Image 1 (cartoon, each protein chain N blue to C red):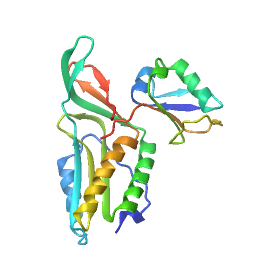
Image 2 (image 1 turned 45 degrees about the vertical axis):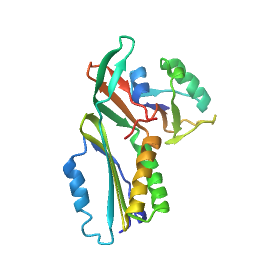
Image 3 (image 1 turned 135 degrees about the horizontal axis):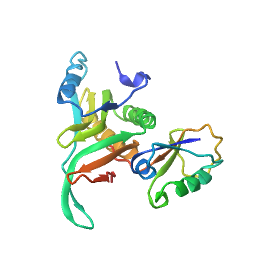
Image 4 (image 1 turned 90 degrees about the vertical axis):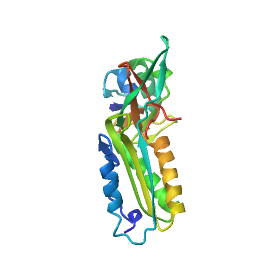
Length: 156
Length: 74
């Protein structure tokens, strides 16, 4: 069934990191949808960004990101982004999950998954969703650094 | 009215929300800028009922207000 036709309230947020097993299970759930010819996935992973802290200019790096969100607004905006994607591309399914709480470097914090009959719409939809989530959803990230200080992450 | 605070703004205010009474978004911003240290120096957006508002508009007091620092999802 096309998910664009459903209007149930969705919550993209999950507490903690996204487990690789959850990604595998999400893929497996689509085995019965035989009109699908391709899946496209983006997985965001917390990166150990090197940080130069002023004024002492000592080197430190990100060890984790603590995510919070204005959950209701983020989910409302995600519904609008999802509708834009379904209007633009012939995709069968679209799933988006984002972590809340403290996610360590190397762990997954963001999972975008689109399926379609053919690869191109799935690819383009995932690229669009990934960019729009970063730009438009009120999600906040506190970068915890190795020297026990922190910085507030800000998307470009 | 209750104003929800997030991220670095909640950190600066030392609270997840503030109780404020204001009859317009401009009046609300002025009040919040006196109560939250350095808010006037930060880049932030004001959301009224989960929609970002840039212009001045009246408030009746039942709205859901939030102050949003720069987004960092993904």
